[in-house]
Image (cartoon, rainbow, N blue to C red):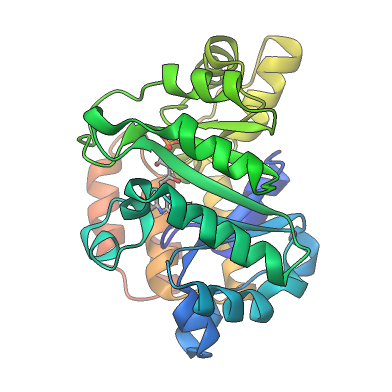
Length: 294
Ligand SMILES: Cc1cc2nc3c(=O)[nH]c(=O)nc-3n(C[C@H](O)[C@H](O)[C@H](O)COP(=O)(O)O)c2cc1C
């Protein structure tokens, strides 16, 4: 996730049971040109493997060059065909590609022509309600040899608050034989079980809830295996953030990332609104430590 899944956060998710994590979406053009700030975001470490990089772009020549820059450090290269952000869509990338399934095929084929690293893709259900084409794109992913497909059950034009459509994930699962990762609206272990039961998907991807509670992966795994899980207390939340902070002090992401994590991970704490306001005004780690008394 953009400005969220830095290496420290990925390591924390891994510690608490995430089977696979990804970098935030990165621009192939910036990677291919050796852009320093993008290379800094490509912060994968050996000890977090398996780890994937996510690329977001549509120019196959740049994609091929970017793959050569990153392939030795990652276990999976994922393509983002679902980002709805307007300036990405305007460039013809992210969710814009849902309108061009053959371009998606070309990108996967080009990527596979230059690397042996497994390729996956992440899509939405379609551009809008009238053009739901996740099954068509999933079949392309399968034909072109992708190792799995992640389906976020929302269209590009769907509003943020609207419910995720898990039925489309089920349809994709019924129509391809590569593993299907269900995504969207899993905010609790019970949601995870419901997603598996309703869609038959092989794996689940958790986004926003992980940013609030990286322990969600352990909770989900426990619930699926034992039918029970430990609730997260205020003390736990502070502990998880402290663990993140210790990693961040080592890996040095931009301070903005640290501040966001402080704010996300204190969500749900009593009096948290005022706390987050104070956190939002911090300028360095020392100030964050003082506010959270850690
Ligand atoms: C702040 C933010 C940043 C995101 N960045 C990315 C990204 O870089 N790549 C991507 O595939 N999805 C990104 N997403 C979408 C999530 O991966 C996920 O598909 C979506 O939030 C639905 O899953 P959830 O309900 O578990 O959050 C982002 C979402 C948010 C809220």
